[in-house]
Amino acid sequence: MFLGSYLHNIDSKGRLTLPSKFRAELATGVFVTLGLDGELWVFPMETWERLALKMNELPLNDKDSRRFARRFYGIATHCEPDKQGRILLPTELREKAGLDGETVIVGSGGRLEIWSRERWERQSDEIEKNGDAIAERLFQLGVRL
Image 1 (tube, rainbow, N blue to C red):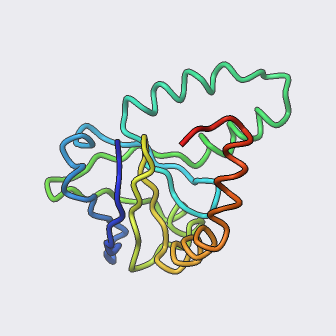
Image 2: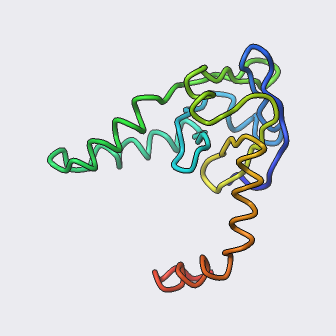
């Protein structure tokens, strides 16, 4: 499980160093794709494979399923960390997520999220302002914390 948040910089070649505490788990490679809130999602190989099996069960006759799969897979990339624990983020992914320089890597359970520092601060502020309403909505959905 990925927990915590970590400040890291993207270097001039587009490489990002993964947090050291997760490197062993991610050493065999990761899949990176665009998240739903302007961030990147980073999945370990095993998680990606389980997710792909579920995605492949989405009905092909459903237009939203097809659109989501295109968005999710169409920009996804496989990255293998180098000896320093860095992954090369493709230009297109960096541009779509607004990543350049300072980033925040956030543990999100089964995945990591990569945010520009500015976007992460805005997201954090929004969560702080609306935390009670978010929790109430989750309880209504049957999520028990």
